[in-house]
Length: 383
Image 1: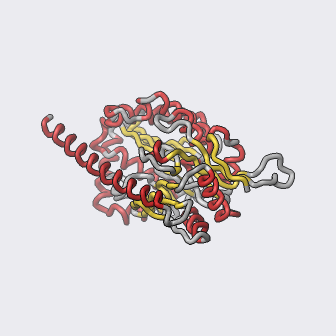
Image 2: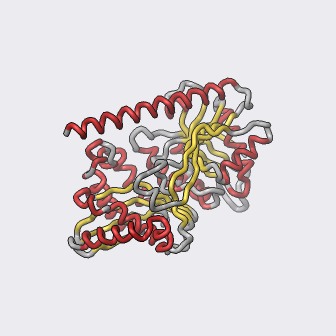
Image 3: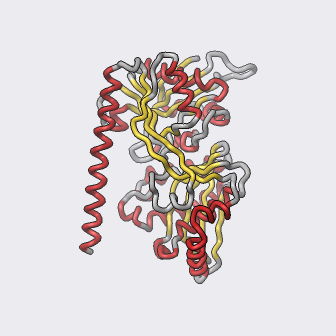
């Protein structure tokens, strides 16, 4: 196997797509149509590199070497501002950094990715937001075991997911209870005062492109737009999401869900698909209807939609831990973490320095978040 570090834009999309089709673990955020669009224009996320593993000889009758593993990557300095020699899974504008590994040779592919990173001068590989009980984590653990080293989990949290193999009404009743569901039905009836309440799932490229504009308008009209964090606030972000969603829709891997009350859109969400997994990327709501819980109403319909879809087994919320909207509705949990892979042995002092610097940065960010939250509450109280 040949293992290299090269610009992400140099990876052949067709080879990448073939790898995605046989990846041992799904990741909608590292599909080529999505990540190439992110790397092309998304704010703060452009010009990523790629750790790539190729089979040395072409497949029988083939003209190109098969791609066996891929990890979009950036330096530790660029990712976290830590000046130490390590590579980090690139931020795909979604909280999932699972590398693509060919299921037929996952352990060897993981070892080869580590070799490519080591040959590039890295002392460690930091895999951000990696499912800790997934096949990729297991493959890296086994590959490291041959060197008597172990992965280090630097940080972890559990986030909401939906087991889409169950009956939707049973799932919702067990999660929310009869009293809460009755209140949500009352709110939906109030929405119906503005016109028939209609849920739509756009999947074809033209329909996705049209629904995306509804999503962008809703997201930018609310608090995200006011804070400057909506996708439409930044030309590069808007270009990325328009390019990525329509390109994925051409492969049946993107849906945009909308909820209307009459002619008025009240909520919209972007969802990606890969293998039997779906990924709830972002939600936008019409804040004129905020008292009627439009985001929750749409999420109830999304729950019913995927529970009725035999191709989907689980929907990852890709949300923060303890998310106030999604956690009470989707009671399943996925544990993800930042995993440090030592490339030159467990006793490498650089690995210990990276772990310490990562912990210090996490503590500082926690303090900064609490201060910002207190400041916002103080300002709102004065208003």
